Amino acid sequence: MPYTNLDYLNTVTDGDSFLMKEMINLFISQIDEFTRNFHKFLEEKNWDALGKEAHKAKSSVLILGMNDLGRKLKDLQLNIENKEAVETYSDYITDFEFQTKEAIKELETIGQD
Figure 1 (cartoon, rainbow, N blue to C red):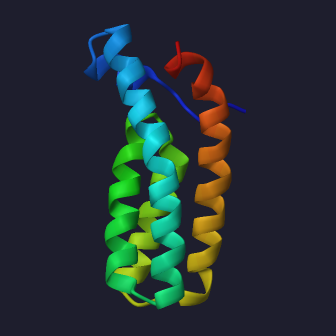
Figure 2 (cartoon, rainbow, N blue to C red; figure 1 turned 30 degrees about the vertical axis):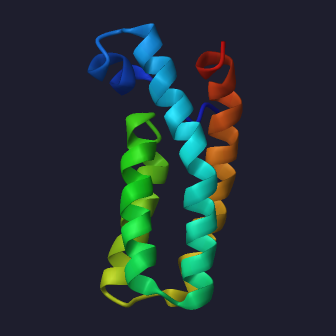
């Protein structure tokens, strides 16, 4: 099952393969920071920062057509805003890590020269 769909990226870059590769490489480089921050904010119980990080990560994954993960990050963000289901926050982060790792495997052949 593919984790990414590059149709949207293709549209916003007007099919410019160089720009697409740049955007893919930017996405790949952001994942470690998102992951570190997710774990840090979760451990610190810094819900405001965790919600903001989920929002930033959501924007990045949606550009790569990762709509399922985008919806999950939106759910996480809403749960944090409503102070609900705190016990599920780590599950969202685990899913983020899994899906982005799989997406990077798909993208590495496209994003790297």
